[in-house]
Image 1 (cartoon, rainbow, N blue to C red):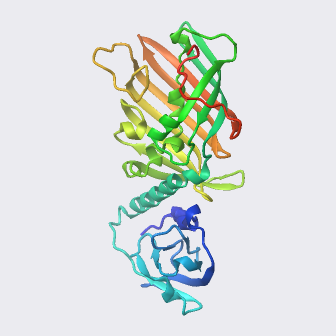
Image 2 (cartoon, rainbow, N blue to C red; image 1 turned 90 degrees about the vertical axis):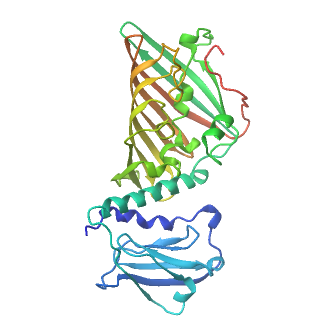
Image 3 (cartoon, rainbow, N blue to C red; image 1 turned 90 degrees about the horizontal axis):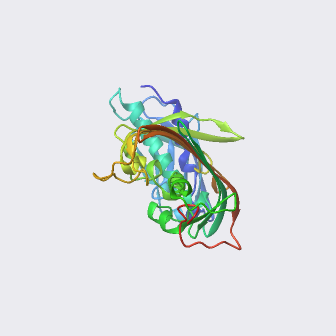
Length: 372
């Protein structure tokens, strides 16, 4: 059976949630995990205390060491590795030996499916951990984000530019991320760099809501919604080192895109990549690509009524959002579509330039267009 090179990602139990910081250490368990049939070491075995995120993983030679805090003495310890049966027993049973040899048995799987199925389970777990750690890895409200919004629409005869200063007020932040919470708690105001107001809806309206909806960490949507993750095809693309930090790059795809998965009511194709920090499971970058047969002019999440004849068709777009310092850095959206028989190319970006957590500008609504 082919062993995945990607099993190095199985050390996720070494992350301990903020709510489960260890107390006084009462014992240190040391040992080695081996194959009961061959006595060969089992590398990168998940080792954890049941019902917690407290644990570790065996190294390349099967060796492990785990410090046991006082409040977790009554827990069971489990050993789990791809291709082997799980093993579980009281953690206290390991206290009597200075060095423990843990033998785990081979598990029978379909030979053709073991690698894909095993990797998918691991990647689902990484994404779940990224989602569960959002409140610890991102800023909590209330706060203001100050940013520069740019939008350029190009058609055959016209180029329309918007350069707008944006103030975002979020009274909750990422403490309890959800789509509903993001909509209720996140407000913004707009100001053109030129001082005059634009009272024409055609040129004063923005698609800022569409940009903000791409912040999946804030809304816990798509692959960052644990309830949806199982519906994606997942693949570990790479494990890069970026500025001295190690990351997972996980690709995702829906064969039959859904509204809750893609955020697009009429999507026919949806795929992308998410980059996650191995140390704390923080989301570093999200990238996506969508093809859609049509879009409502008021938003891609909306259906189009039978009487509505003015909507976008042949819609294609890609987007990316990069995070650092507990917040989004930049969100970009590139879109092409047909409207009234004319091809439109549209580029939008929101670059966050400043964060404030004191002396806040309080907002109680969303300003949907610059004359608003």
